[in-house]
Amino acid sequence: MAKILAAMSGGVDSSVAAALLLEQGHEVVGAYMKNWTNEEGLPGDCPWEEDIRDARAVCDFLGIEFRILSLTGEYRDRVVDYLLSGYREGVTPNPDTMCNREMKFGIFREFAAAQGFDHLATGHYAQREEHGDGSVDLLRGAPGKDQTYFLALLRQEQIRPALFPIGHLSKPEVRCEAERFGIPVAAKKDSQGICFIGQIRMVDFLAHYLPDAPGDIVNLKGERVGRHRGLHLHTLGQRKGLGVPSNTYGKAYVVVAKRHATNELVVAFDGTDTPGLYATRCRVGSLTTTNRPLAESPALLAQPRYRSEATPVETEFLDEETAILTFATPQRALTPGQICAFYEGGRLLGGGVFEEVLG
Image (cartoon, rainbow, N blue to C red; front, side, top):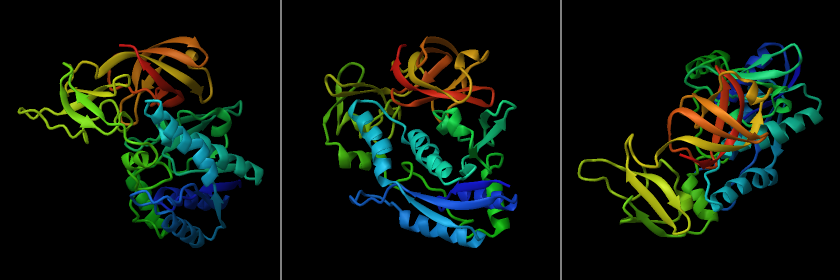
């Protein structure tokens, strides 16, 4: 029997994770990380009070202790500042991945260890594989719900104490388990939005902190086709929310470049042959490995975004933290600031941050 601190969000995934651990005979304590309260009145729903009530109700139902960790200052320092500084610098950060590294498997893990817990548990759809040397690998979760992409920047010391009780299950199976246990939030909808902030749109979040910087939207010929409120509000590959109508044939515009020197947003009609939209070579920095060096993999795969496929790549390592990737097939909208996850089959090997598209 292990002593486990379970991250409780008030949702069905973390609730089922805690219930399964309890059923297995472990000593479980639930904890809610209070990272954001929306005291500044951003438009949108930040249901932290409801989430705390739900998390507490689940812990009461399971008969386990419930704690609240107030981490709003740390969240602002480690996630919000990272997010805003990235957009100021003209890149597109990934707050969910950084939140996992810095908060859930950073501060939360450190708190669990200081309180004498053997493990921390989350509701991520990921699996772990233990080795004889004491190290642990992360494996993909169930097809269709795998979330290892968002864990790509974790290090071995963060992975080793982590448990993922629902990682082998599909979402419908998790719902069934919630009904089997009779968990109060069994029918609660999944949350969407910025990590630990809630139903606040990214564009509204950014508009609250970063001033508008209007400029022209131009096509590949340099012709003005519209106006934008700020380059930081747009990302490569974006189709919706441009305010530029489709052409007479119904083809939509897509963002292919951001020219910071002239404050121009460059768009083109979306297609497989759209100039600037697809690339095969890029530079990735801030490389992190989960267990062993990336160079040791005989068949490295790279996944450039959450919903994309992992694709074979040739890798030229410039140093321990930087590499040039050449994808076997052209990739759509490789975006500086976003995360690239590396795999060997279904095994997560690590990740990095896109720095520059090379062609």
